[in-house]
Image 1 (cartoon, one colour):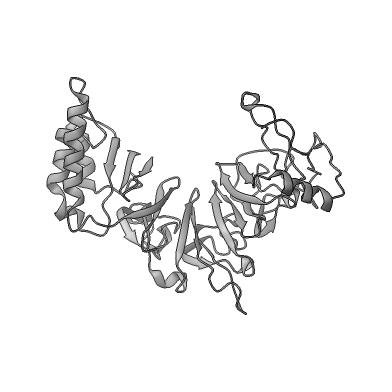
Image 2 (tube, helix red, strand yellow):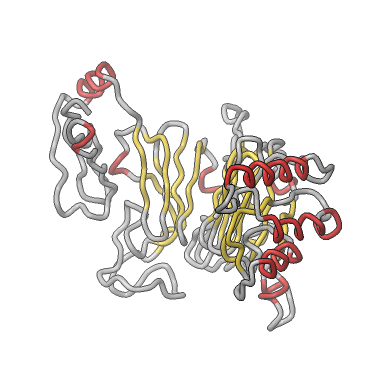
Length: 383
């Protein structure tokens, strides 16, 4: 788990053997010894240190972590007093010259993490055996049998800014074993605009928007040429797929389609764990789609944000006012259609709880070109 404080401090906790917490090894060991833990875990939030030699700057801080608890700890007898003391210790640590870097956004993958600081510098840490750290290496970079251990980075490492072609980053997202970054697109209106999203890491099913296994791994951030003319606003990553939203409110998806998570492809007839095979199976179902494609079934909605789970996706549409709904209805002739029951693979709007004052149905949803029709009803009720 990762938690970002309003002041820009990052705290992490949980399983730590892959380095995904960004906590120096001596701090993790001190935490374990102080609490008699057998597994390599951190059971309460610890501060992640950026930009400083952690092995020298914070040896005593690690011991204090194990003796006095973290900033979120409290003794049963005097919780408030202990919390105040711990917070004072944390504030003292924050004044260290190596501990002034502020983080503005963070994301976690299976066994790696990535963050952006307030200057736009990207940082990564954890297991990088598939190139997901973007530091120019993967397990294949090392001698056979040693790649797994050598591709681990226990503390945050700065990703070379030159990989982002001089563009200012505004968001990062971690997938299972790959990573995405969205840059500011100030020059999007100029001729020759070539996109603002970067991808790196595992590419066995095209999650880096490149042909599956060509290459198998992308070891450093690479701009996605397939979205050269789209201005991406945000991106979300799942286990092996990604969903992006552009400035026009359109949704793009690519990567694994094993469970219908792309919203615009026909998956295999038999669902099974994704095998390490080519992108199309003999049964006619599409296993993967490496070229980003617009999810047509929600093309008439203005999408604000997307989110991805391991094998599923969600999008949130713009909240329409009464006037905008009337305008939208006039464009479509005011016609609406109930979603078909067999359109299970295309995105469906989640009904609002009746507790909130009535269910809300999909409003003016579009008709998919390669999926089933998903047009919805006008919004009803006082929700």
